[in-house]
Image (cartoon, rainbow, N blue to C red):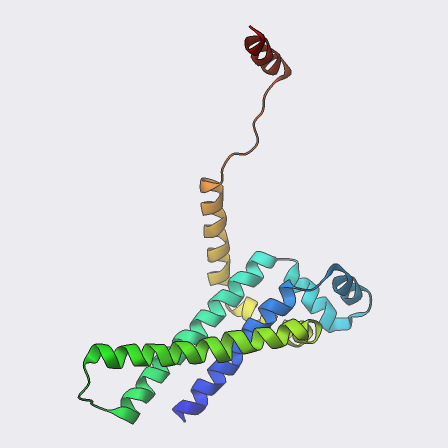
Length: 178
C-alpha cells in the first residue's frame, strides 16, 4: 500500500511538472486559439496564465510537498524492506538518496516534461482545472511566496535607468572637450 501511494504521488508530481512546461511554452498562436475557441478549458488555461508568478508558486509548492511525501514514504518503505545492514550508515544513506532522487527525476520531471513538450495544448487544458483548485488550496502560501520574492527583487534589483538632464549631459560634453 505504501508503494501505491508513492506511485500516486509520483504520477501527480509528474502531471504538475508537465503542466508547468505545457503552460509556459504555449505560443502566441496557441494562446489566441484558446481565447477564440478554447471553451471552458481554454478559459481556465488563460486564467492561470493571467497570473504567472502565482501559477509558478503554486506549481513549486505542490511539487515540493509531493516530492517530500515521496521521500518520506520511500525512506519508510526501504527501512521496512531492507531492515538492518552490515554496511556503514553513510553507504546505505547514499544509495537510498541516489535511488529516490533518480526515480523522482525520471518519473516526476524528465518523462512528464518530454511528453508535455510534445503535447503542450492537451496537457495545459487537462491540468488547468486541477491547478486552479491547487491555486485556491495553496493561496496563502503562494501569495506569501510571490510577495516575498517581489520584495526581494525590488531590494536587489540593479538600477539600470539613469536620469540625466540635458544640462548635465551638455556639461559632461564640455568637460571632455577641454
